[in-house]
Amino acid sequence: MNRPVRILVADDQALLRAGFRLLIDSVPDLTVVGEAVSGEQAVELALRLRPDIVLMDIRMPGTDGLEATRRICADPDAVGTRVLVLTTFDLDEYVYAALRGGASGFLLKDILPADLLTALRVVAAGDALLAPAVTRRLIGEFAGRHEPRPHLALDLAGVTPREREVLRLVARGLPNPAIAEHLGLSVATVKTHVRRLLAKLHAHDRAQMVVIAYETGLVTAGGNRPPTG
Image (tube, rainbow, N blue to C red; front, top):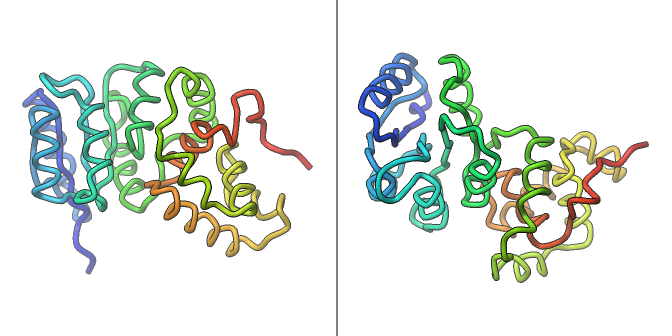
């Protein structure tokens, strides 16, 4: 039997932390390994406990959840930890900042309990938890407002022409089968290209690949329509 997915809950409200723990620990494949009351403590516990997922609130005293997300996702000692941002604030700026900081998903606190459990499993499996169309809209709108991260252009320089084609289509929201059809490749070959892109770009998942595609200028907001035919 596989071990349960290990989760760190970061929220400054004790009642919410207790509720999340009760819900998560009610199923055998998920378990809470720690609780943080601030962003600073979330970073410290993430590096010490090495959870699979940090369920991260945004608004916390001191270091907020967005900064904590950035620090966790940038730390090589936390390479196996993913961040799922959970907040009451449905603002595009927060979603974009969370994704840009390395988060693998973004949920609102009014999510149904069963859907939260599903979201944790999706992120634990290595998938991004944000619809591609939402990702494209957000990044297309906000990517141009920020200076590119210096290492991104260098990372993209090591990407082959075929991988760039795959990255463009990932950024436009196409799943692997549609990318395979568009490029005349097998699905297995596309999966190989995606795996190599994730490694070369130091990306957690497809959502991070979309961020990089926009921030390097490989894809622009005006050219984000999926190909047809």
